[in-house]
Length: 462
Image (cartoon, rainbow, N blue to C red):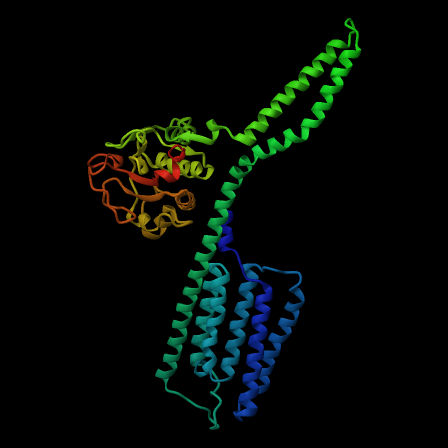
């Protein structure tokens, strides 16, 4: 939800509006002066300067607020851009309406809103701009020209100008909105990925903290042991304090042994923790879901024709990001399965393949087109395309998992087990592989493939 708020909230700074408006004010003032005094065209100069002066006054007030306000809210920004449309429309009304060459500037507030504000705000700004363009197409003062009556064009020409302005509003507004939204989605998704890994990174730093603690406590414990040994020598055999001194000395020795073991782990690592076979990795991923009575079947085997020693299980270096990503994919498979989810690992001399299967409804065609992109779920698709809402919540999590697994060197494919819908255009034919189920099997699959030399630490040993 925080990431969705980041995507939808305003990203427009007050300083930006102030600077852009100063540029507009200077341009408007220059155009009015040049047209009236330079070309000698007659139009309501006083009213035009009054409209421009109002913008100057508002901008002076806003300039005083710049130090206190950084990013402004959607509502305030919407009002500011709406004012810019109204102010420009009044100037255009006084100087020829839609026939004025500067009528195309009505597009600017829409582009700013589309790139910085919520969709609702952009719709409001667009409707206002459309209404303003339509109004000044029919109601306006004559375009300043050498003749006293101004320069008048036929109705068809005015409608052509109106259509061109509306088309520019639509195209530029939509293009700016789409580009800005995709940029914010990617930023939010990457931030979510970093936040997800933050906890695992903290856990990975514990060994360093343990080594530091062992180093820092080593000297005090040595001092305690030395003092306890001296006290033991000075006390009589029948002294009531002798047992206490012996206890202190033994506990100090025990503390030193514990700290030494922590130091060894920090220096040399723990093979049982750092390295795991593919079977152990899959068991670790599935165990939390099995504890919730999920039916998960794990299958591991070497591919036919794999010769020793490559027929032995690959041993993986424990990667918190990969563990999290696999857990997310397995959780999705369990959620959508009807009876069971299957994790099947196969390996040869060159590759390690992992297939995650379920026997649920499978991916819809619409979902396959966008699956893997951030913040795309079938819940939103169901509202847009009329799809049954049985695949909700597979947007950001799937994107994070795909990103993490690809960073580990994996190539991911996903689709439906009937072979009709493969997201990468490599349709799995019915019965062509044991890893995707039997003929007529229902459900979805996710296939991962790593080069074995990249992921198997046992194959890299001398």
